[in-house]
Amino acid sequence: MAKPVESFVKATLAKNGRSAKLLAAVEYGWARWTVHPDHLKFRRGATRASLVWEASIEKAVELFAGDSGVHVVEHFDTVSFIFDGIVLVRIKKADTKLYSSNYPTLLAEMFHVAAPDLFGFDGEQRVEVVYILNQYQTEIAWAGVVARDGGKVLWNFELAEETKPMALRPARAKKSTAALAKLKDVAAGKKKQSGE
Amino acid sequence: MPEQFNHILLLLARQYREMSQAAVAKSAGLTQPHYSRIESGLLLDGPSKENADRIADSLAFPVSFFYQPDHMAGLPISVHAMHRKKESVGERELKRLHAELNIRLMHVRRLLAATETEAELPLPRFDVDDGGGPREIARRIRSAWMIPPGPVDDLTHCIERAGILVVMCDLDPKIDGVTMQVRDLPPCIFLNKNITADRLRFSLAHELGHIIMHRVPTDTMEDEANTFAAELLAPSKELYRYFIGRRITLESLARAKAYWRVSMQFVLYQAKAVGVIDHYPAERLWRRISQLGWRTREPADTDFEPEEPALFPALLNLHTADLEFKPGDFKKLFHIEINDLRELYGIQEAGRSFLHVVK
Image (cartoon, rainbow over the protein chains, first blue to last red):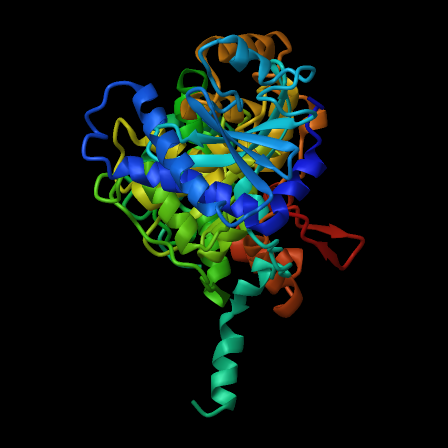
């Protein structure tokens, strides 16, 4: 595997609205969780993560069905998406430091190591699409793409930013509040002049 | 000059000069009991003209000062900075502050006799519980004032647009800012011009919280105003997102300070509150900040430019520019001496006929 290159991954995911679809898949997964009849009763965070993951994957598979450049790969107990034969993406929940947590199987640990190729593909760039919940775990605070090299986060970008058209805040000249101070007599004088 | 000697103003003038009754009496050549009766308003006709002149001289006020009809406002409801270091602010400093604020309010009243201010933004008042708590109230204010997500660009500007006067003063170092709300004047926030820009902004947001949420003092009002200020300056939801994928170090706190325009300690405190840093890493940073002596003064390299009020200076400038006030006119309007005029407002004569309003 090659170390993931941010510009390359961005460009790959920008094709065919892939970034937007990944975001939509994650948001769908979360939305499905929030309407699960037992979502307020479940005790383990892992249950939530699993249910969000299942629904997200289901949606992503559906959304990428018409994209010939996306290959859905089912491994043992997980699913990855390979874009244009190079960018391998998996969907995970992460903490605010952008780290997803996994049971440390050999495969899980190798996912973020650059050298080995995995899943029978050569030279893929492996990244994660992660979602991060807010402080009270009531909604998704951030969803984006994260690349790691072992324990180090190489780079990240937010999917929402990628999918939104760039909106620049219009530069507005700030009117000084000095203009809010007036002479009383001037106002009265003007009224007088206009015959009010 | 009205006939009635206003003994309340005598008390204010004495406290403003931080003099004892004995000192004023001695300087004016009066016995202390007699002076005390004058200050307490026990002389039905007030002091004789001669004694009034002597007292005025002793206190370095024009005698006309004591013949104004103003009432005295109580200590401000907002005592945030004083509360924080209540023990270290002495009775004498509090009395001096009380006197100065009352004198300044009289000046605002005089300035607004010929001028007026217009509010462009609403200034809603909320009961803390009915409004959903300080955080929710701060969010509502951001929304009502159409403050876009992210840092508040110029809080002073927003506050002035809501019709609040912000006045920079040379307050006791232990006091960051205070708010005075009296019936016949717009709310006035007096800020210590000697504190750093980040503290100024927090104090301003804190004082705004008092204006919006508090009519009477309560045990929880300072905490509520702090929470309001925090949410106004850096909404918890946005701060949480800001820190996603960032390591919290002294360097990143400095960057966050520049971005949010608040102190590094504010950022660290809030980062812990919203859960983007764990207890032990946060404690390590607090210890480091203490070791570096940044608790009281964060490094100058991280300072940003303080915000400048424009509305209150505009009231002074309207008098100088449009009404052609000279220092002598201000002296008469405010009934104070030129030294006080310079100290309070930076108004002074340069050469013969120039007038500078520098604050």
